[in-house]
Length: 275
Figure 1 (cartoon, rainbow, N blue to C red):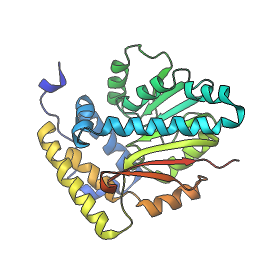
Figure 2 (figure 1 turned 90 degrees about the vertical axis):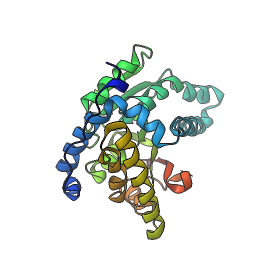
Figure 3 (figure 1 turned 180 degrees about the vertical axis):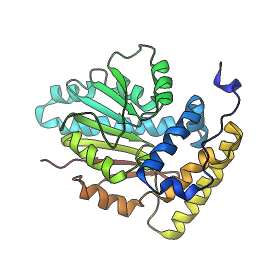
């Protein structure tokens, strides 16, 4: 049945909203239920919530990744730079890949790389596999928790996180895992909602996001809390200054940011330190 004709699904019961963030387990369970609800309409929701800009942001993210990976290979000459652009010899991990938008775009941008998309939710992964339709032989999807990745150390040249880290049950544990599986000097590229360290600006941005998300939760699912969760999760997410400190604590270099939508969203790039 076409998702547009389905009866709107209800989000999991979240009447005790503060309890969602009380522990890693409660947040993990809530996310698992929530994304089971939104999976059939997730791609549509991402488009409308971003005013149609989501795909452009992801293209910007990928272009910057390609530029940085090519520059890292520059000492080896043009042949090594071309190798980086094709992804030859690279392993790429897309965290909380959802329905596979960014994962598939990575496979197209780096056609010779080994691209893995991981997500906690089997319904989201089922949508990703359906969209794959064997178009990309260099893509695999794996059900896994980003706070406990099933990979050995130093496995990945590039790790991407599109709207992922804000949903991490334990952000510190997830950053530790990213640091563990990322190669020395590897690249972490993040697309995420962003919170200003200035309290007044933070309040305004979260309020606007709460209104916009709640509106589309009602329109798409008959339940404001479905996408109202975005604002609630952002309120519990570190602001940009604190996030910089966390990155440093877990072995990453100071990040470079590209702010979008008046600072409500950011593209963030950081390299792991040599070990």
